[in-house]
Image (tube, rainbow, N blue to C red; front, side, top):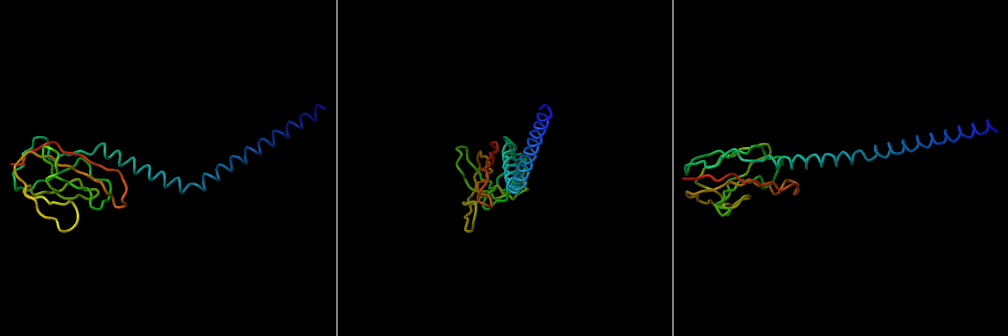
Length: 169
């Protein structure tokens, strides 16, 4: 009887080991079948994380606080980091008055380009498209807003940051 108990115990353990192997192989196979979906999700999560990180570190280098730019001169507007998304009609720089009203649109930047040149005497009345009319700039205290609201695919985070106030005279 003692030998039968040992043989029975061994058979039970063999069955447990075989079941464990089957379960592990099944889980591994299921994971490998889902790998493309998981890779795509992982890539989307990484891009979203990069955009959120970018939004947190996006800031203006120029114009700096209390800078004075002469009216009618060409100045360079520079962000600390470049836009991270390709965009259509986005990555806009606009001029705002002290009441946060948009005076006009300066222009657009492209992915990877942190700077744009601007003649301080003129703006456009629309940010994108044809048929923009010029808007004259007068002396005053302003700030510049960078905003990215519509990426190429129509998705993505809204990124917006304002410069400090500066003077055009």
